[in-house]
Length: 246
Image (tube, rainbow, N blue to C red):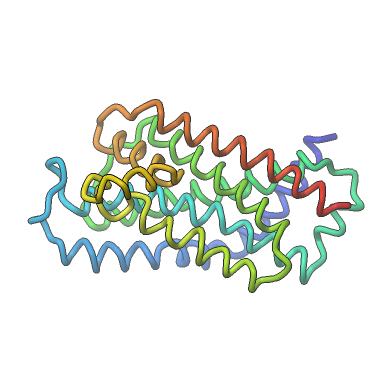
C-alpha cells in the first residue's frame, strides 16, 4: 500500500515536470549561465585554485547549489497544491501514509535536482569545462538533494502562505547559496567564519562534489554530515506532515 501511495505522489509531480520541462530547463540554466559568464569571464584563466581555473572551480559549486535550489523548489509545488489546488486535502482523505507522501515529494525533488545537474554539466561542456563525475560525485549530489527536498517538505508544512515561503528562501536558501563554498574557497575566510560555514550542509556538498570532480578523494565526513542532516530533516518532515493532517 505504501508503494502505491508513494507512486501516486511521485507520478503526479513527474507529470507536472513533463508538461513544464522546457521551462524547467530554462529556469535551471539561466542563473548558472549568468554566473559562468559574469564570474568566469571576469576572473579569466589568471585566477587559479589548487591548479584549476576559476571556471573549473566554480562549476562543481554550481552543481551543489543547483541540487539545493531544485530540490528545495519542491516546496513551491507543495504550497500551490495546498493553498490553491487543495491537492493536499485529497491526499489527506486518501489511504496514503505520511511516509509515502513525504517519500513521494522527496523523490520528486531529488529527480528535479539530479536533472538539474545534467543541465549544469551540459553548460560546463559548452564553456569548455569537463569534470570527472564518478560515483562519489553523484552520491554527494543525491545526499544534498535528499536533505533539501526533505527540508522543502518540512517548511512547506509550516508556512501559511507564499509570503512566508519567500521569506524563508531569503533567510535560508539565498545566504547558503553564496556562503556554502560555491563561489570561493572557504580557506580564504576568517577562521571564525569557516567554523560557522562548515555547519551548512551545502558546504559539505560543495567540497565533496568538487573533490570528486577534480579526481581527488572526498572526505567521508562530508557524506556523513549530509546523510545525518538528511535523516534528521526527513524525520522532522514526517512529523510536520502528521500535524498538518490533524
